[in-house]
Length: 146
Image (cartoon, rainbow, N blue to C red):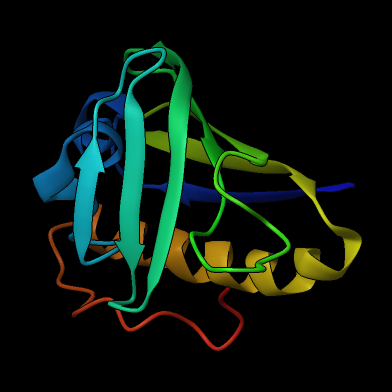
């Protein structure tokens, strides 16, 4: 199993970014088309990605304005990454008026790192656009997704 790490610096405070990680209506403005989330330990994580792929897992840890950790996988028969089989940790690190958003996706099969890495880079860029008040457009996924 492998781990991927993606980081982006966003011109916003953790307080500004936080709702985009924990509120369904804000989350789907940059990631997914439908989100059913309950960001508390044991709470559900279900995001329909790009209108095509159902992801599922549950929250493991939530530290307001600092960190969300949840399990993750895909609801598709025979998919090598079933729901809840990997873990994603997103941490917010203030850097003056900016925030470093660090995403660590662990437990991935070695052959899934490149595709998921491209996908997460795509979505973190969309997050930066949305947090800055821009419109990243509808979620159509990335070439390397799922």
